[in-house]
Image (cartoon, rainbow over all chains, first blue to last red; front, side, top):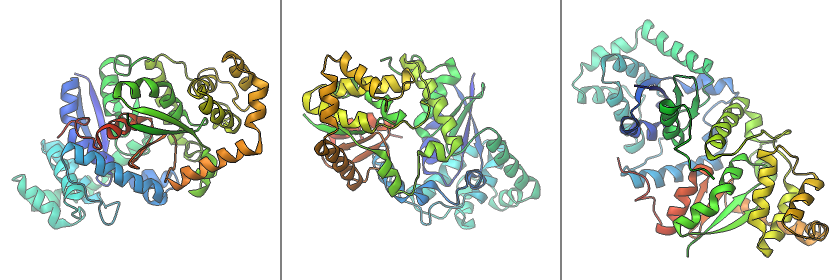
Length: 207
Length: 207
């Protein structure tokens, strides 16, 4: 089965939209998904950006909020703009790495996104993360401790450096086995089709 | 019949993709299209941008080129990155205004885009524009002269100010009668659905 890498950061609202639907869409496409959390901060810094482009260009940020409201309403989700935006997803990403080893990473990630963008909670808050781990029936204290070891912190850092090396500049990004990079929730279907067929023919209508 | 305003600038590659397909997609959706050329320069300047974001953030520009190559190959078009990018679309936009009054605006616009992004021609070149007007069976000299009157220049300027006032920050943009702004070729289907139904429900699958 072909595989795509799903590069995501908890601060990203469009990665939230992708995370909520990727498993179902990929299954229909016959493509497997490897979830790869990373940090956008160093990626933005490499482009000379000090924060999210949605903050640097407020007119774009206002459109993004309205775009999220429209789309979330249609798919059946409330949408709350995080305050502050973007949230700090570092602690959640460290936990997600452990979760992906153990098999509960996708469900954990969706719950973090839901807490952040549907419920308006602060995802850098240890209590919020503990509650999510509890809901999953995990030993929250043990998971948090494991997520904060130097080894695990180093893994996330290395994964972010890998993302930078792959030419990733935003989230979500999807990368196929042959190295094609697709950026944005709007490109999920194209990435899956490419993973399967190595072309977008048959997906986009010819002129 | 509901109507959307299609705000486009000849320099924009994603407006090119939208222009090539908008009439067919809108017809299927039962929505009319009002073509509204404008200039991105003053719009970018209002955001503190001195050129296209694809030049300011080269890593994003490289992804855009690959994205265009993939999509154009699938829809059956060659893609040539204009040199220089972005092209100066001022003269073409002034002509387009006249063409939209006379009914040949959409066809003229598609031919300008094709010259620019498929054939790699320089669309600020008077000979290129003359050849397109000739192909349409028009009196190229008379059209060019009419496009360069102070009145017509002022119309394009006023239309760009209108775009700025509507909160447009990039191209293509689609605006529905109830004032919803949708940005990007990827949002064309959403804009049309919204124009028809006032919601995205029924278009996006519920989670």
